[in-house]
Image (cartoon, rainbow, N blue to C red):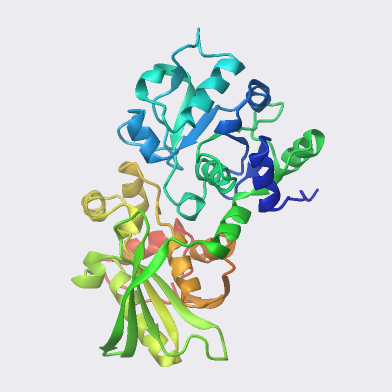
Length: 403
C-alpha cells in the first residue's frame, strides 16, 4: 500500500492550529514515524494521544534554551548511532510526580515560554529535552530538527513535543501502519525529505564569501569559498568551464578533506590521488566542479583518524578501527555539498565516485539534485593502501573496477 503524504504547508497549518501531525523519516535511516505537536499548543489531550505512540516523549529545543535552563547532555560522549542529543530530563516544579499527561503538558508548554528559567523545573523528570541543531533539517535530517522546524514555520516558538510511534507488537510502525493511523485519526502526515525540499526552495545555510580565478597545472579554475551558517567550516568549490552550457551533465567530485593524502601524499589511502585525478578529469572534460568538504577521516576528525591509523598498525582494518573508537565506518554528511551544487546552478550531475552510498545520499535528500551517472575514479594500488582499498570494496561496498 502506498501512503499518500500531505504537503508541508498543510502540516504547518495543522501545527499552527494545535494539531498533532505524523512525520516519517527515510526508510534507510530510522524508518520511523513520530507524533509531533508545537510545545505552545501542548494540551493534556494532545500529550495523552501522543503517549499512545508508546515511544519516548521528548521536546525539541534549541541551544539558547538549553543554556538558559542549564540543561546538559545526559552523557559526555554521545555514541548513539544517530547522535540523538538527549538532555537532562525535567518536570515542572509544581508537579506532584510529573508523570501525568496534564503535568507533562504543563512542563512542555513552559519550555516554550521565552521567560522560563532553570528554577521553574525539577530534575530528573519525565520529559526529555532534545538538543536540535540550529538550521534544522538542513543540517540534520532527524525528527528532533523536523519538530523544531515545523513549530518555527508555524510562527510559534521553535519548541516542539515528539514521540515515536510503535505498533501493537512494540516494533516501529511501518509506513503502511503510519498511513493507517493518520487516516483513522485524520492526521496530516509528511516526510522529512519533503520538509528538506520545501525549505530548500527558499532557505539555505551557505553563502559565497570569496571568489577568484585560480590557475592550476590542470587549467584555469574558479575558486569559490563558502561560509556556512552556525558552523566554522569553509567548504570550497573549484569550478571549471561553464556549468550552464548545453551538453552532458557536468562532471562533479564531492571530495572530503584528507590532510595526510591531499597535502603530504600519504600512501595509506587513495584520497590525494583521487583529488588530482578528479581535477584532471574535470579539466579534460571541459567543465565540472570539485567540492572540497572539511570532514577529515570520513567525518571523525584528524586526531581520531590518526588514532585509527595506530589501530590499523596493530592489525585492524579501517572499518574495525573506526568501530573500536566508537564511530560508524563513515560519518560524513553531504548536505552542505548538495547546497553548494545547487548554488552553482546544477540539477543533474555525473558523479566521480566509487561509493554507491554517496550516490544514494544525493538522490534521497530532497534537494532536486540527481546523479545520472556514477563515474569510477580508481587510483593505482601500492603496498601501503592495498588492505585499505580491499576494505572499501569488501566492507563499504565501493565499486573498484579491475580490483
